[in-house]
View (spheres, rainbow over the protein chains, first blue to last red):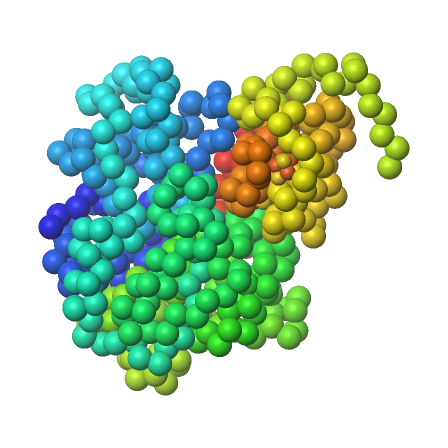
Length: 292
Length: 135
Ligand code: SF4
Ligand code: SF4
């Protein structure tokens, strides 16, 4: 199976391990990703104002690139890219007038957009196309004994019509972690916002959330926390430094992209998981559990 | 706090502007407080999400535009998914922010960020904060 792939900016630098681990894991499952040519930043957030068409150009232009690649589906892993691409797509599908205007704005593009591309998250691809049973069957290194708290954050599941899973109590990541042989742990802060971009000018606000979210996961016995967004990853992983300075009781815990564990379980080489990009080193706990 | 409710404020074009930009009917809100109960940012906010809606209903422009809360909301959409009246509170707060931002009153001065911050935060953080806090 081949699938068009939209990486997004951060997967090419800070979150390179998110990209590498995904590509390797998908290869093990017989899926080849074809990165879009000339993709651009999606803008990271979906424009909420009714009159703000201009900011939908960036995501919709990427969907034109999908058409140009002779595809009608595009897969992405970053929760924010997924949310922005999918919501912009839904908006123009339901509002032809906006779509016509956007096409007019982009009159120099050779291809017009008609609202006919499907935006998929990697999790949807794994569940509905590859099928979770097949993922389970391909596990060569079960993540036995590893207690994983799966953090969803906001944009993977909200607003409701994103439709990836239940917005209040999603379980798709726990289901996947279970199939990989890990022990998923439930924790009440799994969909609580990490304060997102406040990290730029108000890191203390992020530290408060990181403390709450990670302490809650630890209280439920988690060995590691997984994420699906490079901004959540930065806030929950790198910001542990500031968190520990403000909250002396706080204890560090490794935070990984869920795809790093997926790649490991599917037998990818350790380099493809790129653990060196994780701030809190996950290797000691993975070694302790005999996984690397 | 002393609140003066006046017809003049309620009929202020500001109220229409917020409704227009957000696409929401402010009067649908019956002040149940559920949006504030689930908002992760309330501990830092000077006015709570349900109060933002109330102030917007009443056209209390100055109070709203000067609040710290509108910049603490990270559009996490928790309130939107929970409001029993189907109001998109995050969109209302975005509208209030935009009324300021579109007057070129940026909330974030990227140029003033330290070298350290610019180097350490990932592109996704910088771009999203610029999208939300600058015009
Ligand atoms: S949840 Fe909805 S109805 Fe209740 S106070 Fe908030 S905006 Fe108003
Ligand atoms: S969208 Fe804003 S107001 Fe609503 S719950 Fe999230 S942070 Fe609070």
